[in-house]
Amino acid sequence: MICGVDEAGRGSLAGPVCAACVILPNDFPIEILADSKKLTPAKREEALAIILSQALWGLGWASAHEIDEINILQATFLAMRRAFAHLHHPVQMVLIDGNQDPHLPHVPSRTIVKGDDKEPCIMAASIVAKCLRDRYMHKLDAQFPQYHFARHKGYGIKMHRDALAAYGPCICHRKTFLSKKV
Image (cartoon, rainbow, N blue to C red; front, side, top):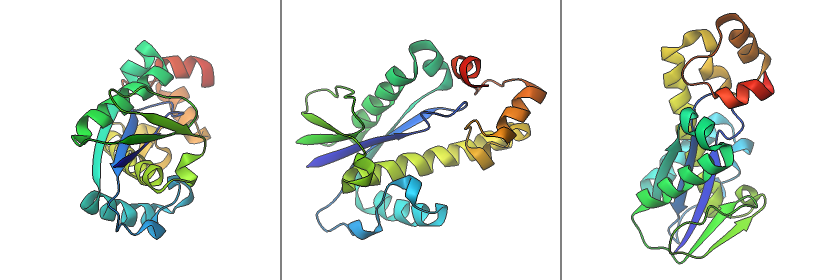
């Protein structure tokens, strides 16, 4: 059992960071997978439905407040540990996208730079994390429509920066990011 781990939302100015762990079954149709950033939203959602119905998976979050308290790297590791804890399945090896290890408990792991473009289980984790975080940002958009979170998912594009200039930050903004990026 090999588990892939990836995150979404690490560079965003608002909202949580989301991590996913995925174990694919041997007969999984890996041809539907790719790095989530390389798939259209429709293809990501199609793949997500298949992953959620056929694979074993866990999801973990770290809030904007936690990001501000412990920094984005440690919050990403926290989200990954939470996702792994929610997997509720023994694994032999964890493959983690990137070059830093979150040190998941009691399991060997390996980091893989650009793993979300190389390893099917990491690709699947990338899709799960991206899709479910995007859905969360749509919910934030309904609560805070002035920021247009559904359009930019909290990233620092001009539309978002303009809304921040007009309205100031809301509770879901990462205060430590705003001081650096806006």
